[in-house]
Image (tube, rainbow, N blue to C red; front, side, top):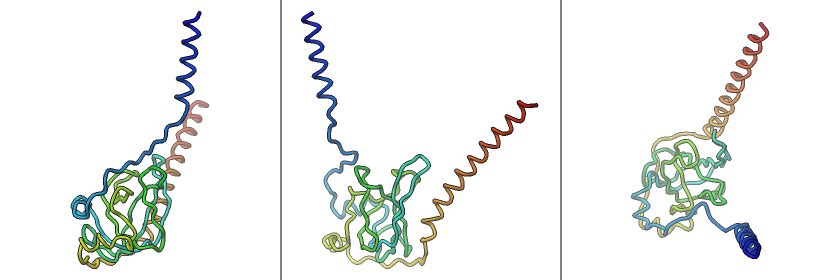
Length: 187
């Protein structure tokens, strides 16, 4: 009986201690790389102004942000005057908190981190507001002006329309299949 009482007290204690949530972060970054290292491992490095930010949802239900930039200078991987970057919502998913109208120095990599393969920028990179990136700019040197004139503002909406159209079509097909089966059973 005493053994049973001690076991119950021990189990209660373990349950109470285990019930407290531990503080964790889904996104943990190693030490910030040097400018040279970040330039070497990035697929795209550019500076630009945020024109538009759209919250999006992937087919798997992930939420993320699509950020449209007007590119002012490029050091690697970007030749167009506008570019779309994907990032998370923040709150532990490594998303960078871009603000519409602000200028940034962006380091990005191709990734499927937020769904479909795209250029992704996260808080673990050296991406930062342009006004706070003077040391990086000294190391990077003078960038080049992008040469290919594009307008990607329609891309922000087009991808969402494609997702909703596909979803609507899938629902329509399922309804047709169900109606067809019911019709067969009646005959």
